[in-house]
Length: 162
Image (cartoon, rainbow, N blue to C red; front, side):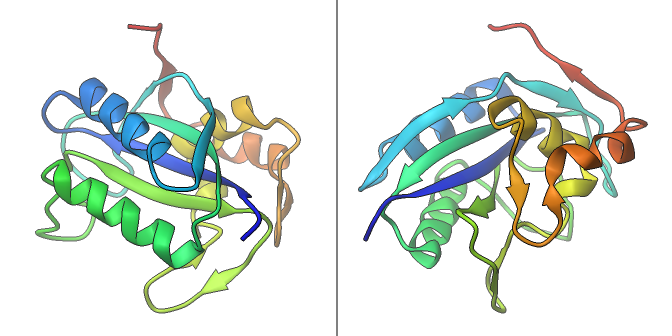
C-alpha cells in the first residue's frame, strides 16, 4: 500500500499529560510502515462538553502504509497501554488519540468516522493542525483555515517547549 498522509490528535487531562503525549507520539512513530513527519506544539485547553481539568493537546502528522482500520486499532491499543478508560462519554482521560484525517478519504463505518466529525469545531484540534498544514483542505468542508474564526472564542493556550 502507498503511504498516506494522516493526522492524529493527541489529548490527555489525567496524570502526567505531557509525558503521556510524548510517549504516544513515540508509539505512533514506531508503528509498522509509519513515519512521523511533524508534531505540533502542545496546547492547553479547557474541556469541551466535559468536566475535569484542562487538557494538553497536540497533533501529529504521519505517513503510514497501515490501512485506516489497522491504524485506528493501533490508536486504541496505544490508548489502552496508557490506561485509557471509558466510564462515560467525554470522561477525563489519561490519553485520547483521534484519527483526524486519512489522506482525502471519507470513511463512515460504525467503528470509524474520518475525517473526525468535530475537527473544524474544536480549537484544540484545528489550531495545532493548521500549524502543521496551513493550506490543509478537508475532503467535505474545503479549506480548514476558513474555520479559524468559528473557534476563536474557545480558550486555548500554546505552551512553550518543555
